[in-house]
Structures are given as structure tokens and as C-alpha cells.
Image (tube, rainbow, N blue to C red; front, side, top):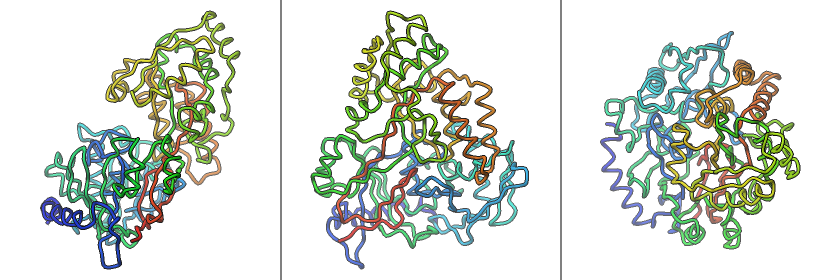
Length: 504
């Protein structure tokens, strides 16, 4: 019997548990009682990894799905459903060796055929948001129940990283008979199983005892309840509405003042300007360099992010394998240099621009507006609904947008999103041939080669210097929780819950 059929019964169990535990662990837990945790986080746009559309979805989806691989806290690839893998001599095929005895949440086996069906669905389903990443897969061969070989259209040593996220999340093929139901009823093999879902309100889950690493999951009932008001989130944690919650930088001091533990976690997130270089005046690199010189990144972090961030000129944080230290302070704050570049580009009397942004970014945009004015760049702020900002990736109506970029499990996948000819954040849809060649060279280099970091950092350098995207600062994922919640680790990518405990 699949968990589709168990859902009503599990929902009843969840309701009973909530009644006893008050939706959190605040009632106290003993070794014989159910341990519960409520997480203040966003609900996914879809529980189907093939059709979900938002970067933050991965955090919630990782509760119910496991990938062929995982990333460790530093962002390096480690085993997941696949216990090991090996490449062919030319790097165009990779064979995954699956864990024996691994099971979906309904107890059915995770075998090579299931992996094959998932990769083919992600590549071929008409509305798949993963098709671009899986286009490299030419075929998938089942060798035996626990061995599957993925054939690629080129040498690509990034595949194990790629398969640590949504692209490699394995769905129970039993759900493919009614694939539309996956949007609200996920069928996976992750640490938890969804028992009840109320869109825009909450998701209730229970521990999946079939998860291969279940011995490291110490939470029996897990609840995801979105934070709807940043101003009240600290009070909500303090009163037990949430046991752990994402908080904005503006609330970090208040959380610390309330005696909560604040986890400031380095993440693959960076504030950026999306720029269409096919639209004047952004078709002149000197204008883009002037904007960058006119931006006081340190003051930006201090004023708009309460000091919780790090000035950055590139898409990856310091310490990450793809971070190129030579780009640090590439365009330092220099108003005179900005004015000189504007004059050289034919704008001696300054420049008028329109900056598109969402309402949540108004404070940040106003600081930018004031900074750029000192260099003669007059900015009109165009505040749009958040959906319009997302639509701009496809419609490209607005040539200058204040945005955020979340890295991908594979750094080269991130570069494709930013700079590839079909990259959503490449509004001009143009890629210099030397950048394409650098990305391909890094992709074809084994990640344990001494040349790998040099090649990927070279690709980053070319992207930053040749493409119009302008990076402002890296910003952390900030979680707050009472001291009764222990074991939260600082994951560079997806926040995971292995070894997290809730004391009574």
C-alpha cells in the first residue's frame, strides 16, 4: 500500500499529536514521548521536484526526498542513495552503485529501474524545470538492481554534485500513474514523510523509518509553518510557535536579546543586479563598471542588512572552491572613478536609470539610490510584485533588476544559470565564446584534479569581467531557536536535520 492510501490515517495521527504537543516540542519530551519540531520556513511551490520553480523549494523537498548524492556542510559531494560511483575513462558515463536495502517511504525498494525512470522523467516531461540540467543525459542503462549507468553527451565531472539537489531527487515511480498528485502528495525516500498539507499554511510530516540514515533522525513529528510577519518572528519563537525559524537580519539582535541561539550560516546566496547587456546603456561595460564603483558594498551591508553579510564581487562566498580571491575588491567604492567611466562612455553629465525591484527590497534599493546619486547616476525605483520579478527571467521586460542569486549544488550549474545562453539570469542571452570554453574545460576536469579549482575559478573570473551581472554582497541564512534545540549544523547548501534533537 502506498503512502497515498495512508495519508488520511496519518493525518489523523498528526492532528492527535499536535493536540498533545501544541504543534511544537514545548510540552516537553521524554524518551517514550513523541519528539516534535516546528520550522518557520517557506512551503514549496510544488512537492514535485520536477515541477517546483523556486530555489528555496529544495530545503522543504529535502525533507521528503533523498538524492542520489548529498552535499556535506562545506558543499562537497558525499553518498546519498548511491553509496558510490565511478566514471568511465573518458568521463562520458558515470555508474552509480545504490545502497542495498534502500527503500521508499512505503517500503518498496529503491532500485536502478526507479533511478532510470526518474532521470528520464526529469529530462523528458513537458513541464519539467529540470530538463535543462538533464539534457546532458543521452541514455540510462540498468546493469542490475543496484547498479545504473548514466551516459552523457560530453565529459562532465559535475554530475555527482548536480544529483545532490532536485535534479537527483528520486521519486517513487508508483506515483507516476498520477503524476499531477505529486504537487501536493510527495512520494519519496527522505528523512520524513508528508502526512498533511494545507497550501500556504502548513505541512505536517512524520519520521520515515525506511530512510537509510533514519538512525540519525531524532525528530518524530516535523512541521513546516511559514513566517508571515518578520516583525513578530522572534516573539513567535520565544512563545513556542516555532522551534526553529528563518529570521531576517533586522531581527538578529532582537533574537539574541531574547536569549535565543542565532545561527548565522554561510550560504550560497548573494545579492545581485540582473542586467540586460543588449539594452543601452548597459551594452557598454564602462557603464557597468561605473555602477560597481559607485556602490559602497560595506555601507550597503551595514545599512540594509544590519552588518549581516560580506561584500562580494562574484557569485560564490569566500572559502568555496569556485571563489576566486583575485576578484575580491575588483571594483572598490570610488565615486571619482565612477564619474570618469561615465564620461568615457558618453555620459559626462550623469545617467538616468530605472531599477526594478520587489517591495521587500525597497530599503536596500533606497540605499543604492542614494549611493549612485553621488556619482551622477539618477535612479527611479520601479517597485513590482514578486511574481513580476520572477517572470522577468523569461519575459526580460526590465533590463536592470535588484535580485538575489542562490547557488546550485554544482558550481558549474550555477554559472550556466548566470551566464549560459539559456541562463535565466542572463537577460541578454549572450555568452562570450571564451567563457563557454572555460566552463566546458572546468566541466571536463575531474574534481579531484589539481587543475579543477584553477579552471573553475578562471571561468568565474571571465564571467564576472565579461558579463553584465553585478554582485553586491553574500548574505547568510539566519536561523534562531531556543537552547532546547541542539545539533543544528551549518550547511552551505540545503539545511538538513540529521542529529538535531529537541530537549524536554
